[in-house]
Length: 169
Image (tube, rainbow, N blue to C red; front, side):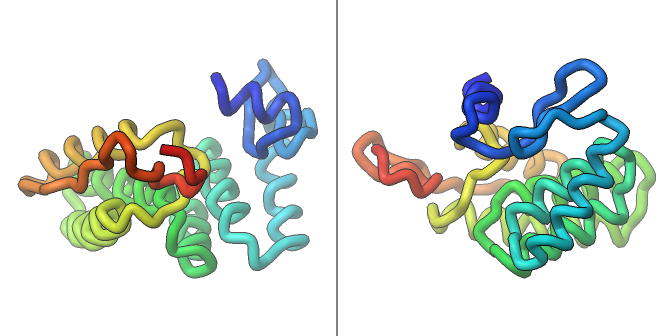
């Protein structure tokens, strides 16, 4: 809700669903035009990793998973600190492995999961499109269970800076 409010007042960017329309970058757009809009924005800012992440999220909403994967990978190429891209790649490949029993998807899920754990434990990542660190921790634990792994997460102490990069404790 906080993210949606910041988007509405123009202090943040993102996508908000409002009935048959969504709000992207302070613009109300028909839902069926959102993907077209985000592709246009990518042409305008081809070096913006965060925009590729948002394009990937939008592609997923339209069930364009191959395009979403390409966009997530490009977002990481441009900005390897976008932890949401790793989360989403792990999720896509885990679903392909668990529901469709695609062995190669399991390997890719493991590879992206390893990178996700390393980035999370470094505490040097960008949380854009993710609401809170607790979500990431829960996702890591659930994914590790699905992958049959036992993981150790770095805990953030009460007086340590937030890993989102805000500088707040």
